[in-house]
View 1 (spheres, helix red, strand yellow):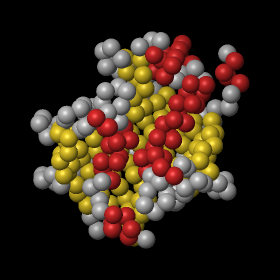
View 2 (cartoon, rainbow, N blue to C red):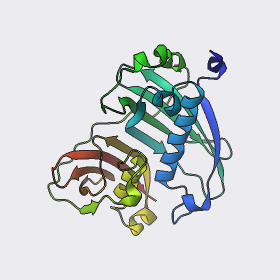
View 3 (cartoon, rainbow, N blue to C red):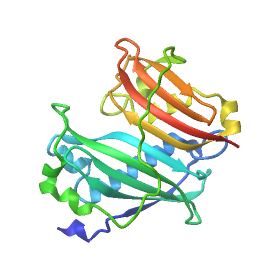
View 4 (spheres, rainbow, N blue to C red):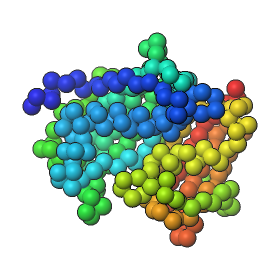
Length: 253
């Protein structure tokens, strides 16, 4: 196959646009997430297992879990790069890792992600080893390491919501549900501007559990401790079902 001449690790060069930064001038976490997802798409498309190829079989990728750590984030107009590779493939899930470098080619962050594949008609999981004659396993890279820990188990004990929102038009993506990066933005909106002036995020985790649809009322529950760790749970306010869990590790600036 012609695409097998490509390297197993894909590297993509990007720039921070002015509308992608926060009040401090740094790339926002949600926009970083968008870049990671885009790079995953570029990597997969070029190697024969991207959305275009999967849609022919009425399938698509679904992001399940993310663990992200970074020392810094690039600033407005700065160039940076993202490298990505497949770490492992199982029947129902695949692991994809990322490395982020700044404009001086210094590593500033890593991410671990877990993905599943679903049938667009049935919304049920698909056996990854049967897709594209099983060639996904050909792209497993066991040489490049990702030094951060994978997603952890998140447990929230709080019984009273700290915030409740409605899912609106600008939250919805092409699949008709809450955009995966909008989850992150809604979670970060639980914290004040002063909090981000005095704290920085060291690690961010998110586990996607159920879809959120237009008009859903979503309640946020939050636990925190004196180590700067926050655990958040998003629940459907009508059914009380958990739709997402997140963990944020912070440090004072």
